[in-house]
Length: 114
Length: 112
Image (cartoon, each protein chain N blue to C red):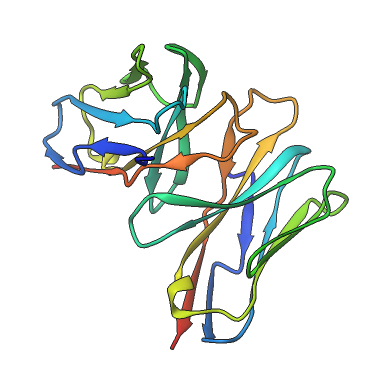
């Protein structure tokens, strides 16, 4: 089975721009979660989607949004980028919704905001 | 805010030695998970222990959970250079809007 894939792997943007990141979960997995990882704040939960519905959301501003498609693929969007948005963005998929199960992580998208 | 706090922040050992990493948390949990991350890459799930379990083994890994002390430990026996990575504990808070909350991680270096 193919693992979780994320595209692109690296991205450089400038302040004020917007960005869309993509995540394809493991086949059969219906839950996709997104995390932001920075040296200062560590790993922080952004949101979780299950069956095209946002199931849970972390404490991030409205500039961060996401969606999930009927094939379980997910995208997250960050608008009006700020320098502090530079981070490794990780998505994780699991068979079922919620944090009760093993999550399978993708390799991440490293976003640099200049 | 971080729910899980790992200890120590960094650990350096010789190949073949055992590595013990600790995680403490503040509120009641449903389960606790340990993950490994190799330099700047995705996380790999190691083990999940539920709140009603006290110990779990997986290969060279042994995890214990003490809910009375709100702490968990991860023991890696007979360490190898390939175990060099960052290790995170992640907790699922009981009663909260269920999501995994990660600690800041422990950097383990295994010297060959």
